[in-house]
Length: 393
Image (cartoon, rainbow, N blue to C red):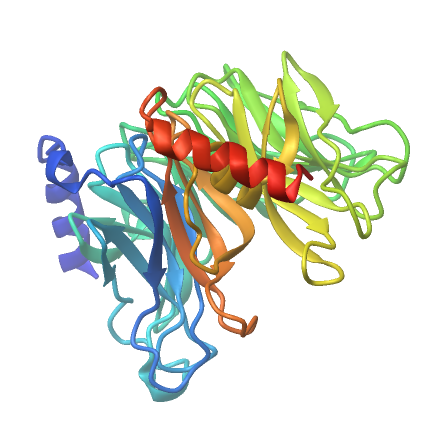
């Protein structure tokens, strides 16, 4: 453990190495991230975050056995497992159990959780090495998860700090952020802006589970949509801090309704057409103009999850439709179930989908949109013909 402590301090003290992604720029289209070492288990992978330019994705993937997960980084079409902590014997066959939730803008630091022989703790990987237990820097009790990091390695997440499981911030020292007043003591920080000025997450107030924003040393509840049982969650914040996304509970939704907060005011985004109303906003572009997430629809499956994309002008739409009809991207049999991440420029989206008729095999995808103004005349004509033949949803 002492060795890990020294290695991590040395790594953090080293000047940042900005990743050169010029050779890794993605061409427009959809990419199958794939899975790790799927010898016996069901192949599944799920991306959690992208770099601002969309060139690198991180997340988790099944390994050889269905009950295991390994953190991964995907870049230039290559999926690389980040491994787990040494000495883990809590799971059959000594398989890795780790997941990556976020990465620094330069791609150098990856944060998430990993399992050591003493349990699962917030973890960090540096330049592909690790994981290192964040707790060792504070001599704190083990347990918890790291959910997000800023550009200067200010990390947020959840662990037992003081009186219970609560949102934490780590920037060399671990501090609990507390919780909203009046409810059970339970909070988690889900995201942080690159400059570390705004943290968002979920706590428990007197009214119930409630989204919060934390800035200038103060946690503020963000309320909920009108109607329905009280409950809201903040999943992500735009890089400029202007827009928070997540879900609230309204009278029109069975479970939840995708929502945004701007200037502290919550707005419901509705849901995709068909089936019961249930949606969640999971990620937002850097300026807050584009939101992606999960809705419930009857698109080819009776009642199932479908990825959505939302903006102020067009509202909520099927991501599949936007990619094929607006951008002329051939999805090659993909059905996009959920969009989990979007780059700051809004040009790259990651999520989970199915690229075959077997819906048990869900794998991560990354889709790169054409740059504005680069659609060819042939592509535009093909899109017009496609719309006329099929009609718009």
